[in-house]
Amino acid sequence: MQTIWGWLPAIYLFLGGLGAGAFLAAATLEFTGKRYEIDICPITLVGAILPGPLVALGTVLLIFDLGAGLREPWRIFYMFTHFSSVMTWGIWILSVFIPLSLVYGFLEVMDTYPMVWERMGKRIPVRRIKRIVAGVGSVFAVGTALYTGILLSAVGPAIPFWSTSILPFLPIPMMPLLFLVSAISTGIGLTVDLSGTLALPDMQKRFRRLPAIHLALIGIEAVLLGLLLFTAFAQGGAAAQAARDIAMGPRSLVFWILIVLPGFAFPLVVHACALGLGRHPRLVHLGAGMGIVVAGLILRYLVLVSGIPVTL
Amino acid sequence: MELEGKESRPMEKTGLSRRRFLGLALASGAVASVGSTTTEKLGQQRTEEVPGARYALVIDTTKCTGCRACIEACNLRNNLPEGQSYTDVLDRGDGHAPWFLPVQCQHCADPPCAAVCPTGATYKHESGVVLINEKLCVGCKYCMVACPYQARIFDEKRGVADKCWLCLEWVVKGDLPACVEACIPGARIFGRADDPDSEVGKLIASGRAKPLHPEFNTHPAVLSYIITEG
Image (cartoon, rainbow over all chains, first blue to last red; front, top):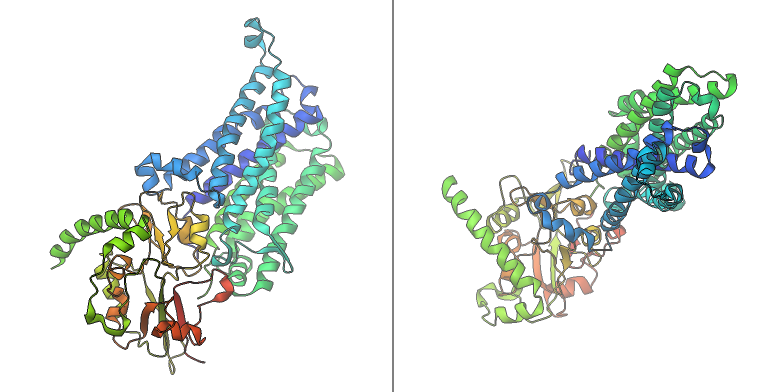
């Protein structure tokens, strides 16, 4: 069991991914023009407003996890200086992404409720600025989501499970990819399955392609998770031990009951039914959204604690 | 006794860290100025305070009896809190043929702890020793996670990462690291890596002393091991 980093990193890795994923979901609707099919689009509204506060909260938690940096906060500025560390890159990415997503949220509110901005008398090209912010922000959203995985994979030989590669013969780390897909999935869960379903009774009929996209994402994430365990098994040593603990050992109950069931199996069935039968019961969609988001948090916690140090 | 130790430790510790920062961060200038008063009592294993000296510590596991005197000596000299240690002695082999593997910071040539450190607090001293500038450390523990030798501890009181620094403050004055001085069976051999005539130089050159887990690719620069066969 990995004991150096406790449960707090799991929460801020999750919040970073959730915020980035929600931003990407909103930006996708912005660029495809779907957002403008309704006056008040709950998906873009939530996906634009929440990422800033969510990722900022994650960053505050990160700072609370520091030792001397918390007691002497000026030391935090040193964290911008050492570019060989992925943490320095992450701090820079977060420093750009948080303000960008706050601006995006502000612009989306201005666009949705134009009364205030119109009363100011000046015609600010809100939509044009919003598109630029969404475009640049998307790059940093992908960066934020990838960073949460790279932070773990960059430790190299010290924790073999975290640096497990995509395939046994393909030395590309799996964690960044898995966390990126999981981030988008939790982001869609929050914006579409939860907010969209709550606010728009006919949401699933309006956005017909969404179940298919979401189904594909959950499928890809399930394949990546399976590959992670497979490659870790093949690698042997501490990585295989971690995979064994997760799949059939002391952590298997958490994995199957709290991650696979609510985060993969249930949403897969829900979206497959929506796609095949055209049925969209609201309560079931809410359940799927909730399951995906909660499973995303628990997945990060599980990956963190399963980071068994290499055997000396 | 308990009280006495507790009262004196924090004071010594602050003195140490200040000297560590002021003295060692300034690298060779400081090393040269610390001086030329060699203590002869240390005999063959004595190191000389030459600027640019590179040190080596060979651990002979065929001699280690697992008495853990090294841990005690290290804890005392570095005023470490109860239950924390720069060095560990792992039990190896089975009950019939046990042997012991002392592990501490290997002072890698490519230290992953220094690479992942977001502030640059961990750095490589020219003597080959990996040091921590405590004034820069934010206490994110990334270095502790990234060290494959699990050689780092966390100083809760000051909120910074900490680890073996090869007793560099004393070593530059010609003394031995505490663990070497305390080793009863003589399993720890310390000397100058850049001196081919030294005992450690010969052990490394002959290939008898090898780095621990070279597959980690961190290229341990100071520590090497003579490992018990089988």
